Image 1 (cartoon, rainbow, N blue to C red):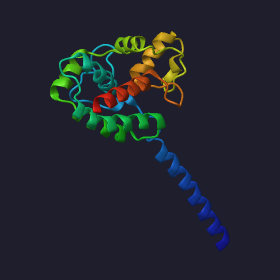
Image 2 (image 1 turned 60 degrees about the vertical axis):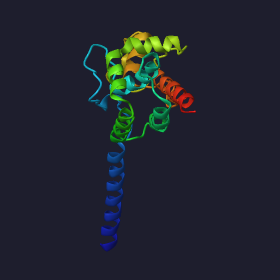
Image 3 (image 1 turned 90 degrees about the vertical axis):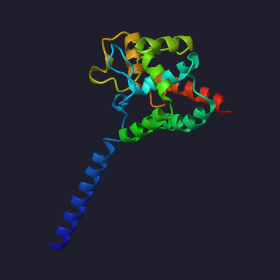
Image 4 (image 1 turned 135 degrees about the vertical axis):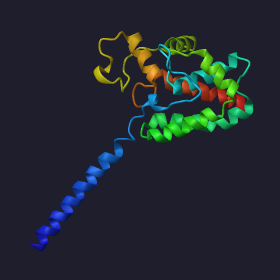
Length: 194
């Protein structure tokens, strides 16, 4: 009887350990880019990009304003954006970690820069325009995380816009337009930081 009780305890312990692994991995799996909330950026207007994408595209577009990112800011921001790219590629970071990193990135901007980004009112069409201007092809529809229905019934353009607006990348290698945009931003910051 002792042997059966010991065997039952071991099996039950293994079962609990496997369940614990499942519970722990659920919140750290795919990153939901809509979860980051900025106190400086507006996401309430029609077709608004989420705060994460506003910071990414807005950083690139600041070069066209009178409040561009400075070389000192680039040196500060570069490792933060690189860390975000790494989190995006691995896809196994807890949303709280991503949010904390985005908050650090946002704090590196001046209030004037954040106002300029907010005033840009960046929307889905801005992602499409950026992709077109930079030779990025959108529309294979191979992205993940489209939510219920997977974007079925949508045109390739509409699906790509939805994916870009949600920060979804196609495939596990991170080849979506949001990742391409993030890579472009990192390259831009590297040039400024030198």
